[in-house]
Length: 83
Image (cartoon, rainbow, N blue to C red):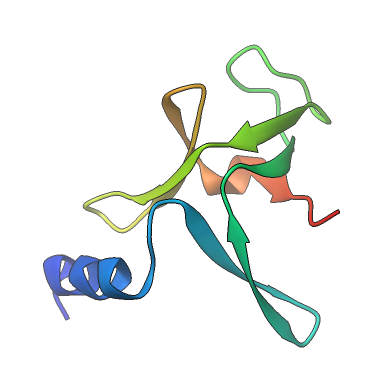
C-alpha cells in the first residue's frame, strides 16, 4: 500500500485531536489535550517535564508527531500519562 493510501486510511479512522492507545488489554481513545512526560532532553525541556499534546499528526513518510506549543515532535520523545 502506498503512503498516500495509508494516510487516507489513517485520516478516515482517526482525527488530529485524538489518539488510540492500547493499555493492558484495553483500547482507549484519548482526546487532546492529553498529558505526556518528556523522555529525553529536547527543545529546552528536561527528562520528566510534563507537557500537553495539542494535536496528533502523521507525516507524509508515515511518522507520527505530537504538536506541542505549535511545534511538531516525534512521539517517541514522550510517554503518555493516562492519569
